[in-house]
Amino acid sequence: MNFETRYLVRWGVPGWIFIIIIGVYLGLIEYGNRDELLDKVIGNAPNLLATAAFLIIIGIPVGYILNQVHHVWIWVMRVKWKEYFQMELEIAERIAEKKERAEELRDRYNYLLNRVHELGGLFVALTPTLIFLFFYHLKYHSWNFLEMLFFILLFIISLIVFFSRNYYRRNLDAFTNYISGRDYNSIINPTFEWLRDKRKQILRF
Image (cartoon, rainbow, N blue to C red):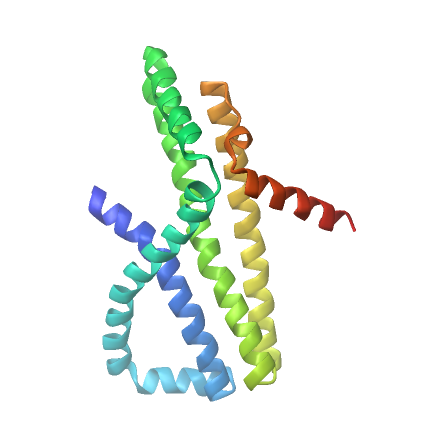
């Protein structure tokens, strides 16, 4: 897989998931039950193929935007820029100094960084989807069993993605601390430190 294709897939996945979930859910609401929905899908297969091709293309910019939302939240707004840039330079220098292990360490760093981005983009795609579906039902539509089951499964998947992302985020923090000797938490913007402390206080109750 070449560079362009690899990144198109990474950017596209959150967008495709976002579009598919909304589409399937609205289909369940419109047609009421699984058999009716499947009959409608089979009966309109040619038109659906054209629509699917269009949505695949649209999913890439949507996914890219969702990835950028995650990037802005975690790196642009969350950290003190000057300290973060300095830490990035220190990591690159320390890895280069390792010589025999430099390539291995660089690959490990890139892997963890990519996993955080991928899972973060996916979580950002799932979160507004859950919020949209929840408030849509509150205002316009009552739940049936299949829709409720779908929503619960989606919520569970979102939790799995959230915890998985946090696992790789902490793994990345430990790695950068090992390489540079600096803790990621030491460069967090003071505003986010305050929000994090408040969140911990709320969770105690």
